[in-house]
Length: 107
Image (tube, rainbow, N blue to C red):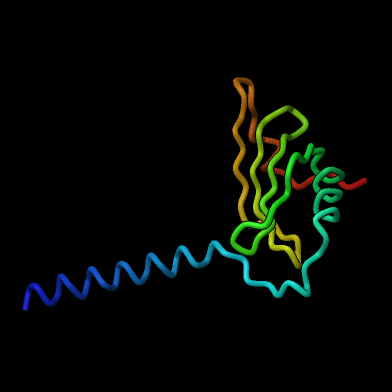
């Protein structure tokens, strides 16, 4: 009885972790995707980022570049809505997260 409980608990944890990993993927239909150039223009205008590369990864746009202070950026966007799904920033020695805690200024 105890081994059946352990086995079912282990199976449940594997299934739940698989579901959690599946949430990282984007699943919007390709016919609805916006051009990569639109994403590039948006982040350059809104955030002042310099984009080095945009590629498709797990159905999402994966952007690599630097912010206006030279910090390395890796971001994932939903390709149809261009909504930010994840953002990683490698701050330099004098890096400050304050720029990313407030909304971008609109001109």
